[in-house]
Length: 386
Ligand code: ATP
Image (tube, rainbow, N blue to C red; front, side, top):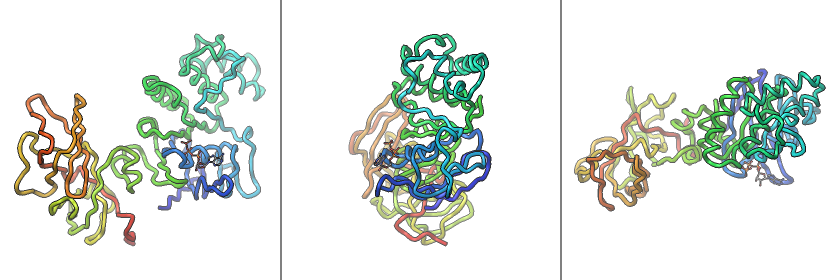
């Protein structure tokens, strides 16, 4: 799948980026543009090329080919390779990387002094930044005498102090415990909104990406799989990788039999019975044609057990299937269940009330997935329709 996005705005534009380590290809033909004040996240599994992309933008790794511009000015292009310190970009890393021999304030003032800002002005600016990240009272403390979360805030204040055109963040929260991580997500996002800074963020944590970003770039094996806002990525994944990496998903192969005004109909032969689903056309901008092979997608929370304490239906309506319960985990507010239906194991999130008795293991139940709760993408093993 090719994602061509070139935007010569005053944000970041990356075109045709290719990066290698020796003969290992780390990034392949990556196109990406980020508007000013936008928060964009690279999301993908370990080794997919996120950090390498960030390092190319920072000037810490030299691409094999491609172009990178910031604010319309080339950072990397044929005959151009601006050194890192002249790129007007700051970075926040996973390791806090605060200067151990300096106080919190001195850490934040460091970049301002390097930019030859007058001392009194730099001190005032550092104070503003420390207030922004909630550390004003720790200004005179040695930076290494702060907690991990506080040190990461110092790193953030230091990155923001010089008001760079772009801040790169590489897994900045992964050394923090779960509770602090959740709080810092929120704080970073609020600070980004308040300051209007442009951020390119890297994580392998999908909930971090979904909760913080304006747009998420899903990567796998050096290539972009899909770019979209968090809502669209979750509800309209364009391939199996995105569907299963961003959230949990059930995928079943089907063939389109009929296209109507509000919905189209798909026959799924591998569910152990002749299952027929109607899918609302409103879930996507386009619509497949009769005969096309697609993957039908539903999230565990999009399926419903039609009759929680009743046996499976003997005659099935459209969008219903019979399935056998093979595992069930009670998590208080919901059950995480696995059902078997034909060749598939389906994950279903069931919410029950105090009066509905949970079914026995092995029970046959009827699942309902309404036309509005199904999405789809064209199957990758079939040629796309022109
Ligand atoms: P992680 O989440 O684990 O940091 P990532 O998505 O940031 O992964 P990269 O670090 O960009 O991935 O790595 C992309 C590919 O390049 C991987 O195949 C990796 O093994 C390889 N790679 C990364 N750094 C080097 C290096 N210094 N020398 C050789 N190969 C490298």
